[in-house]
Image 1 (cartoon, chains in turn purple, green):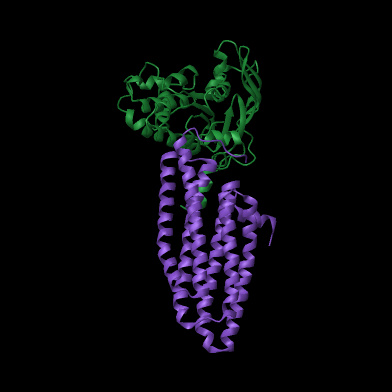
Image 2 (cartoon, rainbow over the protein chains, first blue to last red):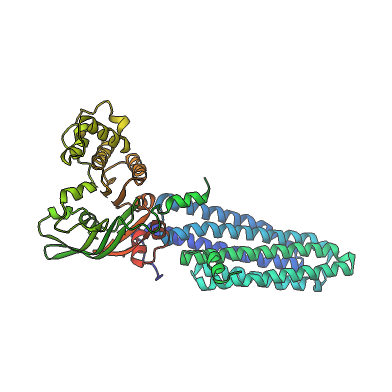
Length: 231
Length: 269
């Protein structure tokens, strides 16, 4: 659909713009949290891990603000069509971002637990790659949402298989290290939980991309994809 | 109630292949030289509520009024194209307009009860159309019409008091009772709630939903929320043209046309 004109009521226009800005800001915060928690994990940086945990409170507050703003717009403006989809998806996206923030907090917590153990590079190389892939997915999903790019959203969803494949291969890899030497079990188990957290971040990125697709097209991605590719 | 069943109640209930109750085919309306409506093709499905929306002067009321030839009463008004009721052309010279208006009833924006008793307001139509054979028949029609219009309990003890003494919302329901007393097949409503408070509006909307079981309803409304709440199908008019029509939920969540989108979201078109 062609770009929309401005609302007759300018304060309504401002409210929608601010809601979009808030999602953009929250997206930035969560991307930062994931990046920093990964740094904390890979460098075993206690200070950084602590910062991520404290930062999560701000992300939670941001979600509250977005939800309050969306509820207020629904109550006072009765949004329709594209506006309605924007308000409803902002609640969904804020929820997925908040959960992603929780995953960052989980990674930071693990970092503090592994700290005393020391970590061999061969163990965490895979985790590092997975983090990079997932962070890219998250960024693309948020960008697709903010720029209302349905094609980019479809791309994010189709790349989720890569995240799952990487999770499965890391699972096997870490298992191998554990079988090689039982002394690796503690570290590798922690890292296994980290990969699971990252895999979930990938799922949230997919959710955000699905919301982006719905926002732009008014249709649900899942159903269409299934129609196109019968199993 | 599951989400699934909530979704199905909102969907049209007409049989999938049932022919439309009324159909407009390339309908145009002229007021003198000025054309107010252009080439409107619209099907009115049976036992559905169809809402017509659009800015003032877009032609939605003009289209509504052409469905029971109310436009005939306006000097210089001319209708082209074809409008059918059960496949019969309603502008055919052989059609009795009075009988047509008994089959296609109308409720107006402002409640306009006759300056007569509540009973007489409802009894008037059946009397002139010879629907009632005797007094008992007429009583039955008046009572059941008032009951269907959700007004019976409020007026049963004062049927001989003037209709004009009722509240605005009650007067509107009286007008609906009057309209359905002639047992019409289609009910046209021209902004039936715009002069009513929110509670009276809710009562009328509830009523519209109940009437849908027995009548085909076409409603013109300026309240998009109302159109979204009461109708199964919505048609958007702009500058005398039908811009978009479709399932109500599609029009309000995902309209295909940019003009529709601009109008329903409150943007400058």
